[in-house]
Length: 625
Picture (cartoon, rainbow, N blue to C red):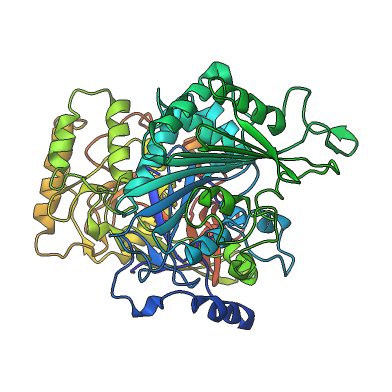
């Protein structure tokens, strides 16, 4: 079937940039309230329907204001949502402001982007309202395109994510670079913004090189500068970056948090908090030319480096916790993005009231979106990816250690070096009767052929170790099949091929390429994209993997009579790969009796597992401990 647009948000799934992209609509429009809001504000912009421009590559049109959205997930566990103006408003010939916004600790992308709070929606959805603030900025900024990329760390904590990844500074810079490549504009200026623990993302970026790149237009720390340290060179890098271009801007928002308490206990330590961090920044950046200080009522205002650096510290006379109020209630994001621009005084006022209320999307779709079926969309081929290079790429890996070779292949796949015909998954329909005599139906979506690298004109089916296969599957929101599913796929297949066993150099890359050529010769005359089976053994998930550690479960390679050459086996170690192994990707969600369920939940269910398993419940359908 052809995968279509669907609702993006699923807060249960937190896994992101070199890996996978999910195309999706930002929110589906439903209900009289939603329609009224949309009609009220859409008139402020050009009608997206009148545009002849297509969506950006890999983006889908959202029901909200005609915006274009897509999602990406990386093998390092970062999730990115990109939100761009409608095609009618997104003009590649104009400059573009790309806002990379790092989520705070404990907040998902959905909560960070925001919604109204009716219908019992969690209060986190009303804190920051990043989407609404960006929409307000688009309303007043007609000079350029405004695109926001909201980035979320696995585990909802950038500090924890950075601890998990020792090379996080390089990974953060690579992430930002990959996002920039997705966004058109002449030129693209980049704003790095973070709230709370998202500041760890910003300092990771700063740590990622000896200098801050010139294409970073501004850096905004919204009560998120806890990690600023002179000893780490942060001050010198920021000062050099500001002095290198008079257009560069640094904006810091904080409040006097020295004496705030929660449940009678101090919130920050004797040396912690953003008040102290801000004054460390002022001292470091103002060594040669001190910052000027003024009092604007509720805020102390510090300006330095020819006005390019601005620090605003709320006096907090009532000793309240203002951590989130600075961002949302006080319009902190809008202020930070317009400082030093023609729009600085056109959108409203820093300190409140909210200047973007008309742009907050209703919450009724948020609750529905959380339980919506995720869609599998493989990442589009990245610009500059060499075409017709599958054999050359594989040949270049000859002699490399297996781990290094597979990492290169994973990165190529997740950069979109995948044939187009694999992108349209097929739906498999199954029925079963449980022990109580109750009939059940299920549908699952599968890749029409085995995972391959290359283009429709020149590709090679890739054998991979089970752990590498699972990494790719997870990146694409997919899974590996069970033995029963392999049989169901074979029965439904439109092209059944007779297995072609080989006996020499079974583990060599040359044999991988040779075997693929033999399969293609047998497939001649059959269209690409038809559901194909019989060409490979499948790497499967199975309870048997738990019998012995570090083994790979293989099954299938059916002859034309339907009898598999390979019964379910775990004879090989998990590092063993030969030409006959195939990776079939399956969508990570299954529709059982009309209800969308996670694949793992179906396999673990004491009754419904029969839809996907002939081994009983599979409690650990993974090769990762």
